[in-house]
Image (cartoon, rainbow, N blue to C red; front, side):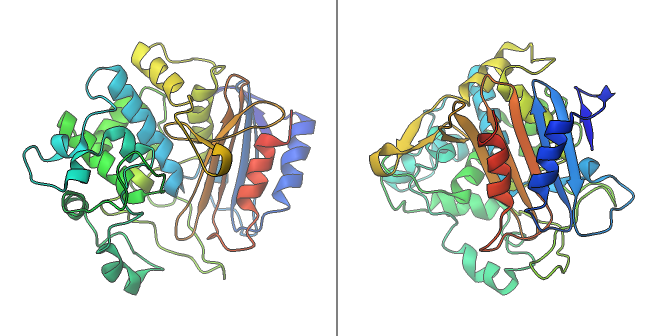
Length: 353
């Protein structure tokens, strides 16, 4: 158990925070588990799990984020908007395939619609499932490449008029990634690195598996290992891999109290923009969303968070804007009905002053 200020300084752990994380860890059953908390840039990290630790410390392994990759896509879009390279109201089809005939509803879909899950698109393309179902537990996405995602979008018939309903969509956020690549003439992976990862110093964050031994291995409910995730053409929606320490760095940049806050005006503006509520939904508009985060009220102020899961791993990212509190958690077991991982991580964010 260690507590760290911004790397490379390391100091002894705070007993109270260390005890809190150790107690929380007992509620989660996973081969590998990391719970990491940052308070005003001072970090406490707890590692554990039922598996024997390997040669690389758990907090230095890269974990699959799944849908918790979406805040990275959102920050990228916000920065490109701040730079004047695109606008939130730009129509995706016009950027992706100018002049191509599409359904009128598709023509109205904007970059904001894609990111905020209000495009009217389904969660995944209709023709995704026939190729995915036979390999659902091993490689459902790898056989559906980028060009197929784009074609599915251009021939789509949205279920609802864009901007009228919220429906969570990996399809839509993936289309956003391909659209930004087309608009800038830069591959998504390069664009993300240039605009987000490198400026924030996220050297241990990537969208592809790293060298042997550096990536965490996911597990099924029964403990059997699963292969590394191949997201195919859905990169922007779920391909990010990162170490827990890099996750804290990413979150600290959002809290407004991190040491070494970005000096670039467009990045600073983007980090502010993604914390602002942009829509409310549900009964009595109880659910609040920013461009990229779910937002909930707590006695200590609003919290912003996003969780993600892949075939054998889970991740949770969350922070309280303006307070300096951030929580990152990773686990190497597939989510199941009685799973406690997200609730445990969420509790660290919402139940402590």
